[in-house]
Every structure is written in C-alpha cells, then in structure tokens.
Amino acid sequence: MSDLDRTDRDILTILAQDARVTNKELARRVGLSESGCLERVRRLRDSNTLRGAHSEVAPEAFGVHVEAFIAVTLSRHTRKAITAFERKTFALPQVMAIHHLTGRTDFLVHVVSSDMDHLRDFTMDAITGLPEVARVETSLVFGSHRKWSWPDLTV
Image 1 (cartoon, rainbow, N blue to C red):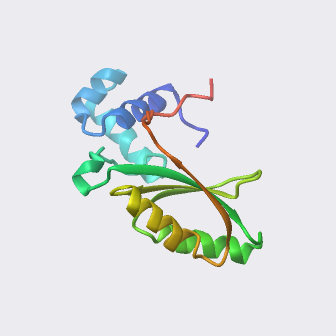
Image 2 (cartoon, rainbow, N blue to C red; image 1 turned 135 degrees about the vertical axis):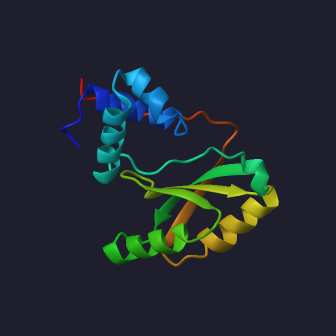
Image 3 (cartoon, one colour; image 1 turned 60 degrees about the horizontal axis):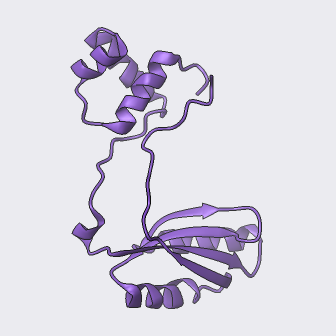
C-alpha cells in the first residue's frame, strides 16, 4: 500500500511488536488523538494492510521440541505439480510455513516435531512419499531470532 505516511508506518511498527498495546498508549506514542489513532487503525485493517493480531506461544506447550527446514526439489515443475505439492504439504499439521523458491531448491518447508524420530518418520512418510518430490535435504534448527516488524524500505 503506497499511500501510507510516516504515522501509519509507526502505528504498524508498534502493533507488530505488541498487538496488545492500548489505543490510548498507541495514540500517545505516535502523537495523535485517541479517536484519530483508532480511525487510522481501522483504515489499516479495512485495507488489509494490518492483518490480524497474534501471540507468540512457546512451542513446548504443544510438544514441539525439534524444528527443521526441509529443502525440497520436485520431480516435475508443472503448475499442476507445484500446486499439488503446496496443497498437500501445507495441509500437514507439522508444517508451519512453505516458501516457493527459485534456484536449485524448489521449496523450503518449515516443520516441527516432537523429537528426532518423529521428524525422521514425518520426512520419510509425509514428504518424500509425495509423488511430486524428487529429493529432500533436512536441516535442523538449533535456534532462531525473528523480527516482528518490517524494515521501512520506502524512505
């Protein structure tokens, strides 16, 4: 959305870091009246620029102790094969995200599991068993850091 001004981007940055901030505090931090701030947030939601509010949950609460990225090379690169792979893979509960890539690897699939045996079985049964898959390479996640706001590339 190109018609965002500095205040809109400030609101988005603050909400990305803490979606529970009150409208009163948000308005104070961006220098707007409470009603003006609320109107901007509504406009950002209505335009689908602001897409939901989420909470970070400890993966262990759901029995997740291992995370991995599975690099997948497809056997065929037809639209039908790509769509089928995306649909089947994203439907699996262990899959957190799918990234369609250019280059040697066709997809990078972020998966979670309870332990190494579960990861091995999942990879062999659910991923390599798909007819669209030619090759996989699994990399374990030792740790990660995530930014909760986007850099402002408009300036």
